[in-house]
Amino acid sequence: MDQKSLLAAAGFVPGQLVFPDAWCGHLPFAAWLMQQVRPSCFVELGTHTGNSYLTFCQAAAAGGGTRCFAVDTWRGDEHAGFYGEEVFEQLRAQHDPRYGGFSSLLRTTFDEAVARFEDRSIGLLHIDGLHTYAAVAHDFATWRPKLAPGALVLLHDTQVREAGFGVWKLWEELRAQYPLHLEFKQSFGLGILQTPDGTPLDWLQPATPEQAQVEHYFTALGLAMMERYRAEEQAALVALLRAELERYHASTIRQDATIAAQIAALADCGARLSGQQQQMNADAEQLAAQQRALEQLRAGCNEAHLRIAALLQSKSWRLTAPLRFLGRGVRGS
Image (cartoon, rainbow, N blue to C red; front, side):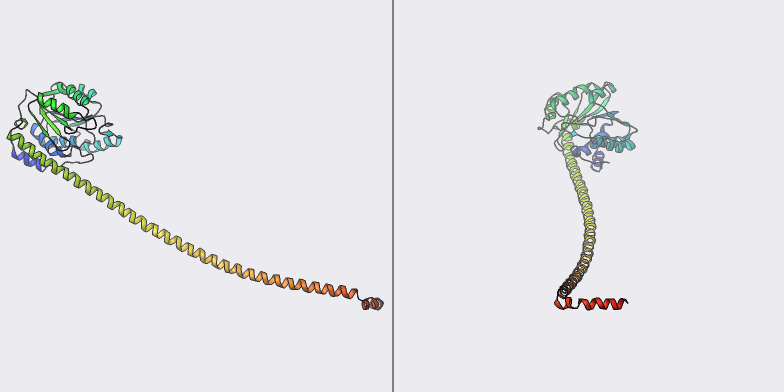
């Protein structure tokens, strides 16, 4: 086995690594496999966000000569979950500028896409669609005539035995039919088998030193890649939290300034209200003084009226009436 290729696989860095990380633990093996096999045609059934497919394309671009096809509706399913248009648009933004010259994203169902390929033309097939036993068995049977002699088939999620997953059951059947096979346990399991009539790959022969070397080596690299993904994920989370904290701090400063301005405005309003209250109190005192003076004046007037009335009713006033009359006559003449 080529030791240089194994060392190169250890230094593989994926061009993108995004959620979900279900395929993360197999990326170094995928890059190494593409370089080893160099198929004329590679097809992936079920691509989602593209971690696996873009890795195969990245390795194919370095080696050259491989035509790549990703088949997916990019709508999701009951196992991958359903999602919107943004998943396909983000994948296309990564894919088209880098790999559009030799790779195509076929947005269709697996059954509709199979007619686009000639029989015995696909050298490497990766099946990663709906994971029920019926679905994956149908996909394998439908695409089996399209496989070239000695082609390799990859089945993901061979270790999952819950939530309706049935790849493990098909994998057990296929291992009995195809003697050349290998399975990785990390990242939910990945089964690899070789179809007959091609040049047998020694590392796919069970219970051989070559297989043990490949299995142990890429298991270790896969686990390291998973740790890398988790570290990047944690770093991204820390950056997100730091940005949120900075936004919160800036918002707090703005709120503090707003509150201080409101307190100052309230204090100014209170001062104005206090001045107005003092003026109102002074006005009230002045009005009360005016009312007291008016009452005194009214009392004086009433007293004068009483004195005049008493005078008019007095005996002396009546006795002096003729004199007042003569006096008015003399003043008139």
